[in-house]
Image 1 (spheres, rainbow, N blue to C red):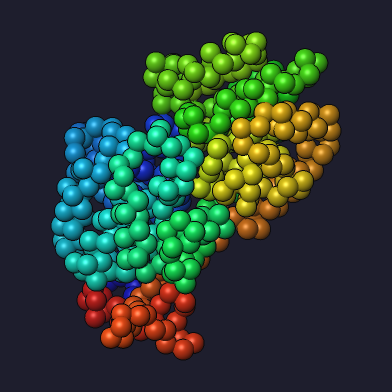
Image 2 (image 1 turned 90 degrees about the horizontal axis):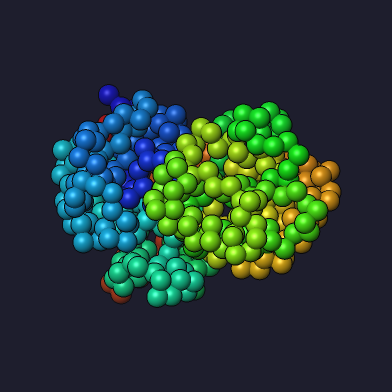
Length: 445
């Protein structure tokens, strides 16, 4: 029999499977988040089902990721890769499958939805089985619309769905202060419903390594000033900004830009169109011989790339959180990042790196020049970054806080005749109130 002190958790992540390769079309920080949260919850003794979409016909119904973590593949449209922007019409099938699974399993103690479409499934499970709902959005439609305008391919219904999910969730996780501010400013979410929990980094996998050994392992020259850009190959990530900054550097700086990411292990621009656009820009600016595209790389090789670099750069237009700066800092490398979203929360200006305006190659070039001219400063920033993430951004810390929230939402609001929530004095967190015994909900001892 399962220990009643431990929880049965449904982590819903419809497009971002913990089994997917990071750096692909729709594989990035959310995949890492779901994988690490699931593994750490299991390590604490909880039982976790990750509910994700079947995107290949050969996938089994479920995969045991580790003891206590099962990845369940639910049908949602054709069993093939689809962009997340095209998934909304298939969500009713996904939600029905999640409901059948939950009924068959005897229910969950808490549902943690990741992204707005997973939130739709979470709302249904809450309605059908009275399961508390926690939601992490990872990205917000109105923020995306502010920055991408007509290039945003998500259906207009996304915005209203996000509002409904925020209203229905027992707790909404904001990943950084900007995320919290955006939900209050743009969606008018009650701040008492929000809790801030950042993403984390595995400081065992991502740790300092000898730079020259890493370069030798990757076949990189020892005498170059290597600038690393790592992540998804989409325009909003601002890789073009880094290429423009490279072109502004003094010709005497032996700089090389290493661009890691793409839809395929080969840096084929037909498979990853963004690589083609960036290559054309590099040729136009005369720096194409200084830019190396590696294509997609597995997560177990990423620490080598961080270790080989002199500096890690990430200058997106906007960034809901951004795990790569944490990984770079955990590897002891200085970070230059856009002063946006989660990056301005995790990178400490002048201590662990620098913050620059997005789409401002001159500002980026100036900071790169400073670090190249002062390697001792870069090393000091790298050491400070390592201390910073170990102190504030480990997955252990993240999941301990999520565990506290999961337990807190075993309470439900008490409503009066006007429909206004009233809190019991001093007995529950701000977003909670009356306790419902778990055995009353799900029949667990």
